[in-house]
Image 1: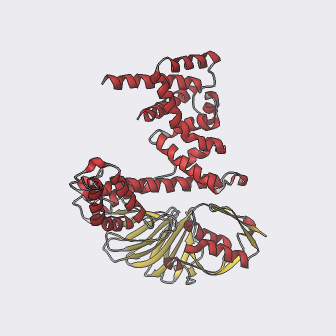
Image 2: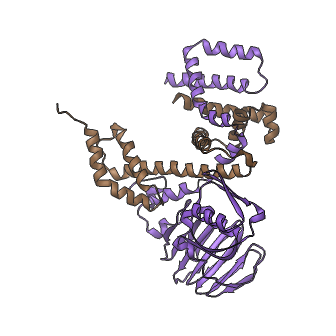
Image 3: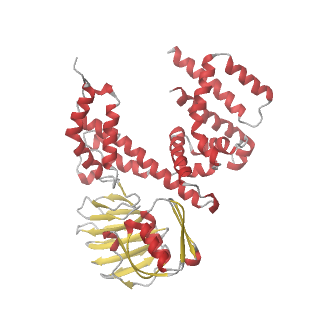
Length: 318
Length: 167
């Protein structure tokens, strides 16, 4: 008991010293006084040494000259998958936070509020509570919000193929750009940076932009839209769903589109110089072998692919 | 005494034989790759904590350990992605070597663990002091907060670091 109090007192004292010493206003006398405090008791000395060890985690960024703001931005990485996991593992007989009340609920209820997500290079099939199927492409996320009125899938980004089974409730996919609703249909949806693209593979889809524009998409049609407007409805080219089999099929498409399709399959940075982004590409590529794809592109297009490291690839004009 | 006596190791070994495939299958539903690694690490952790014998609900414990390992793995990936994204916005000549990057990603995970749970502004303040060597007036200006807040935030951060240092 006393030990714990004593330890708290020590921590308070040391904190006061450190806050002063780092302020930029500490005088030479302050530094001397701190050294005297440090030396007057072995416990003070031990605490200071342990703190130095703990702060050793900053040695690498200091040695590499990494800006504190850069580290700060990285630490703000969202950890959305934590919540998903908490629910996903319930059922093993463990109580994890809310797990106790969920243990005996049905799968449909369990899936409420679950985040569906895939990582780099992963594709995963999810069976939804109504029996619909969602196949998520790499680096894609969606939230399930099913209730008595509607089956809502909140699209948080990425690409997926959805097989909607018939149900009294409408199935709605809500993206940043607008929403897509269906009763029974098969569709592809992709959303990146506010740009949404929907392909109707079977059935009829009602598509509406956030701005309130609406249109009906029939089997074999595709449309791109953002918050404000729709592009022209186009017939499907046939290659849109190739990613389901791990393939990328393009016909006379801009290089930027090919690189964007590869990004979810690679860790690290791929820089594409704007000067070459609109070069036309046709072909069938394996998403899982993005290095080979880049090699093939470098052989057939006037581009140079330079690798600074495994994580850092630049694509520029020759 | 027999030549080799390791009841804990034998016990974990028997758990491994009866539950490893189950754990792999369970993890595979949530991890595209690496399920086997996490499952194996789970038993390694169990092996290095001799106080757990006998376990009444081994699967519950295994799930708890595996869950923690998965958190760490996912957090590492999230951090890695965010750091690389942030790097991408920097000047191109900053592209680090693979070794430097690997070291940095490891350090990032340790920093994340050290500062986990502290408010964003406290983290920002501490990092500007620790990595950029800014004085409190400079930090106050950089973050648009008062110098008084900077002192308070530094105290919070040091208090955390000192508490963990004594653990």
